[in-house]
Length: 150
Image (cartoon, rainbow, N blue to C red; front, top):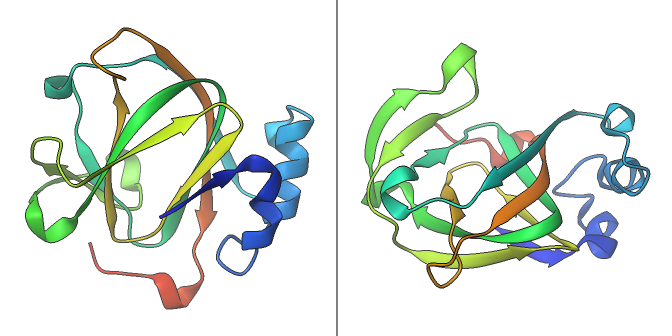
């Protein structure tokens, strides 16, 4: 996992191919200009019992916060129970387990890059309070050396 200021995104080009182009697209608010798939997400933060872990084997989930903040839990896959594959042939699967591991705060102006094999649970409330996150989730193809079996 990488957590840093969005302005520093290009420094991670060895792990995040196309990082400079992704940043330029983000700064112009033009997801179509990014070199890979961008999903624009806006949602209310959730109670822990409404959140689930997922893990990817060949993609990096690059989350860039535009507005708001959320807690993201990161946990080794081995501590969780494998569940269903992601829909539509997506890279990865869901995992069952309560929030555990390391809680990371993703807030406006920052990014979090979750590498293949890192189980993550997004959308957590901050101190139990209502809130929201508006972010890009960029599906960055991971370099082959990072691939894992999920």
